[in-house]
Length: 349
Ligand code: MRU
Image 1 (cartoon, rainbow, N blue to C red):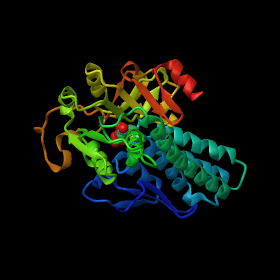
Image 2 (image 1 turned 90 degrees about the horizontal axis):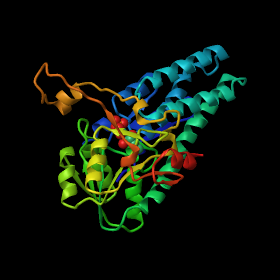
Image 3 (image 1 turned 45 degrees about the horizontal axis):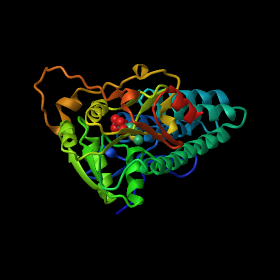
């Protein structure tokens, strides 16, 4: 099995970003090269790269691409180009806070080196992007270690969307918990929601789990209640795109419904996310911007029209699960339980 990194910087400061084109999975494992900001923005918007941490890493490298042509330029030209790149990347997708967190780190790095030659600032930007990338690897491993203890041997685990290696620098957040539990010798049966409309669960999560030899069964999203009632699921683990100060967590559309179902069946509902996914500047989930996507994703999914012409479609890409439905948040620093403003502040302090 060829181990292809989700994201990879090729070369040195004038290099480029290589990524798996996730829109082609599971049928084709192909990589694409992004050589300018526009290509990175397009890849983020069209979900060639997706998942909150991966979007942040891609955007950080996008900033490096943005200053390619101004490496020897004067400060004003360099910083104008930098800010233009940051603004374009920030406009690519609105919900995952990791994107804005990574861009902020890049801006701060540039201003720390403000008085040096522009070639030095560019080198510092690449070092920072690589640090963001490397830290995310370590965060995945730590989340796995903390979360694995919450799963028991021979349990059924339900997950939604894709919070695995394709969404991060290593082996994921929600899926890290599953992979680490399996590494610890636990046998799990994973149910992957197919995750309408873009099928990240069926296409990506099932692909990753199968490649790593984990028992995975895909279900349509509307089957979760029945699967729970049949006693096949003992835990739900999902990722997050942005977590407010009170623990309300935005994740792929359908996550909130799963949390309600889990509560009705007394099944613990866990969110796994690194500290870069928390947005302590917002008090609650009502302030999280929810991305609205093209209706054609619903009406013409994967090449076939399934809705009559002219019918209205509503296509929010994310929803917000209230903190009270979340049994614990697993982050790289430990397990936050119960989930509230105080426990989150204490863990992230
Ligand atoms: O629209 P997507 O595919 O980017 O949505 C991704 C999710 O909702 C993931 O669960 C989330 O970003 C966490 S990834 C570790």
